[in-house]
Amino acid sequence: MSAPRMLPRLDSVNRSFWTGGADNELRLHYCEDCQNFTHPPRPVCRHCLSENVGPKAVAGTGVVDTFTVNYQKWHPKAEVPYVIARIAIDGAPGVYLTSNVVGCEVDAVDIGDKVQVTFEQQDDVFLPLFEKVS
Image 1 (cartoon, rainbow, N blue to C red):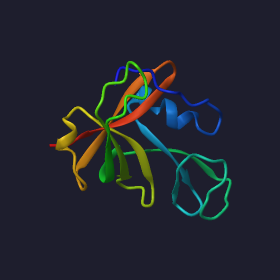
Image 2: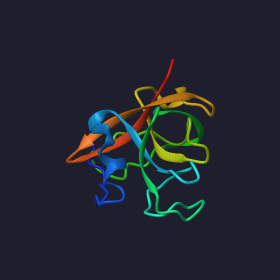
Image 3: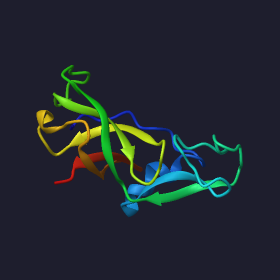
Image 4: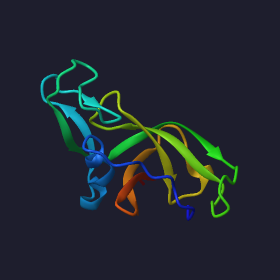
């Protein structure tokens, strides 16, 4: 999509997630005490309440858990239709990212499709988007 996206405000907790794309890494918060991932990033583990959390790079692959196709032109520069999908992240049980599946026709996307992260840079933010893996 060529329309500018609303960007998150970067802070000490979420910066690694939103800037990992500069190194082509999808980084999720990981608890060293209970070995669970937490998303969205937060300063305390949602599983065990430990403060021993920080960013950890994951493979950046996943599976389309569910999706919808948006036909509404919410911005004058938006290219429609586009896919909004919930991606189950490989190697991070219980972590789902809501993102877009790009690089293919909208009718080519289906539940269960394997996907790989790709990043779209806007300012200092690298937005994680996903492409189908053939």
